[in-house]
Image 1 (cartoon, rainbow, N blue to C red):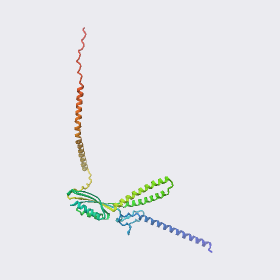
Image 2 (image 1 turned 180 degrees about the vertical axis):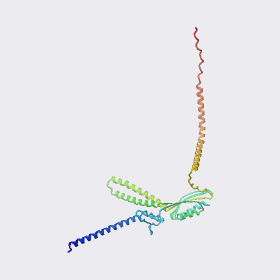
Image 3 (image 1 turned 45 degrees about the vertical axis):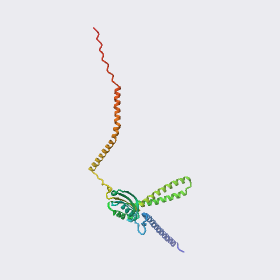
Length: 317
């Protein structure tokens, strides 16, 4: 049999081994939690546009900063960007150039979003709105510029990556709320609970539908870029460009003088519009007043004053 001292030593050694094993297990659990957190952060990658491959397929979408809480950086091809452009081109034949512009858009996988034309030979003009895939945006603009003599080009971009990620997170959270509301509705026991939960569930579903509509709109704008093409005939007037804002004393004096002249023109216009009415209505009214005053004077004649009476004779002495 084992002596009492050896038995206590064996029990102490077993306790130490169990303590060390539990500490290692706790450390491993922390690593699993960190791994899960990283997976959740990686799930916030931007949603790919329609017809494009997923950003995370075969490549690293983003890399986390070394410090905790640092923002995730995405490469350019993984960002959600809205491209918008307008171009003005002077052409010989507006109808033929409009047909070519439409063919360029459809050939690149896009479509015509709007078409407005005015035909008057040398003064013809056409404004066409084209929706083309974002990767083909620059190439389509260059092809449109070659239709004739380019007069103006305006390109703008808007990075909506953060908004897209925020919408994805809000949609995921709202879907969870809707699911929980449906579970609670299935467990309702009284009529009051049923009515209250139905109202709450309807509100949550409406909020979810609104978020999903915003996300679809954003996906449409990022997947298909908008290009407004203005085609001008040789003698058509080009749209005026926006003038730069000027400031200073002379600019203010010029603006004030212009405003004063404009006010005088408006005042004279109003007087000119009212003058015929004043003549047509004022002359009869003035004549009626004059006639009424003459009749009143004729009726009311002044009474002639009485002749003076002789003073009484003085009494005889």
